[in-house]
Image (tube, rainbow, N blue to C red; front, side):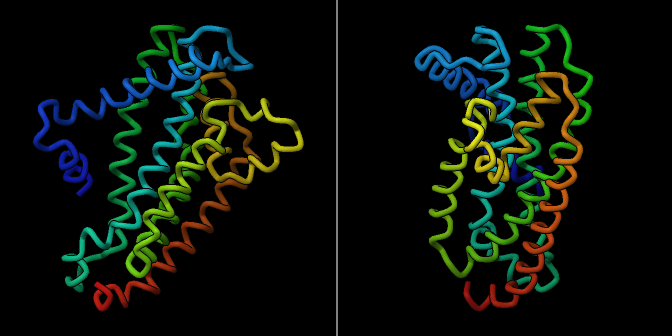
Length: 248
């Protein structure tokens, strides 16, 4: 089902699945031009190199895009697969997992793009990059929990899809994607840490770009919170699924 989701997105286009490679490169170029050339943005911990700025920016976008793809798709998962609702033996709870699998595939392709550019600029990727799966694990659980919740509530409240799109767009600019957390005044930094994407973005940059190991204590707290959200989201989905067929 993950394979069908990925290939179905590009079916009929001339480049096919190659779009999953070209789109990240194109968006990387657009964001880099806007923020490093037009707005003259510079990363505090880096140099004035526009290429380095692009790599730091793209590392944050990798994390955000994984979350955004899962959450924005979630409200319509049950609605777009109504035929599965009528099949009593079909495990509807795997639909958010399928969406997550497709999002992870696209992230992997984007990560390969990032690694190629990083190798061309610096020669080797930091050894701390092996900790990236651990850093992403809480984000995966968080995305899955929210997807279960939104997929269920999207059946009963159709407006949730529009609300989710607005919230995700807002989170993009309230996350440390285009700026480091340290760029904010100290009084505002705790507020930004309330954003569930902030720890994942900051720690992903630490292991991918700066060559530092993640904050293990923060990662542990993040994992516990994400596990709780995943459990609650799954419980909500299982509790409300009984009414899906009647509503649809």
